View 1: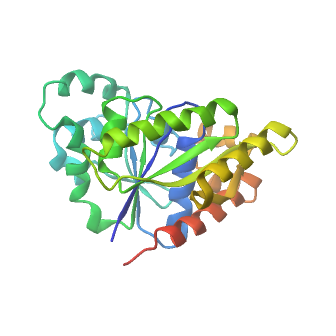
View 2: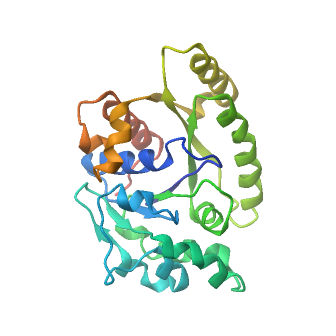
Length: 255
């Protein structure tokens, strides 16, 4: 049975794309069949996977317009996972879909035909609450929240929880399934305070693995690789290896 995980947080710069790609790479390394879906018009997961788009490639834009094209839009990457890419063309999709009935459920429809092909589908969503984030949450079984160890990020959690409550009208089963502390700097007191508060508030939802602040994390996207491939022995890569093990325990493969 496939688990669809939306990586979501209504705040930019918290590590959504880094987490999606690193987790996808590590789950694949552990033997899972993984699909990454890029729903961000900036196409960060696409460029971060080293994919250079050509005119012959279909993107998530075409998939949302014609969900039946989902299978044709997948691209095999060098990192173990398949990818449905995105480009800036996606930015115009909201206008194209504005009057379409059921536009919030287009991604769910598209991914329905792909579930049997994968163990995990990871959706990288934009930081804003727009049509693409709504589609990602409406399609997901669960939400993985990268939470930067910063006071403003913790405040943004309440906004995300309110959004999930609204999305349950479309997807009643949707819940936060995991909270991942990111950009941890053990030299600062505030990071420890925020992490402790998050663990008190969300309990076992918070993964034991934490993602450190690491310069290699910044370099990896520019190299078109997940951190787990770019710097295998770095602190960040090792942290994502630990996360992948926890994810498999929390949402086991059944195939």
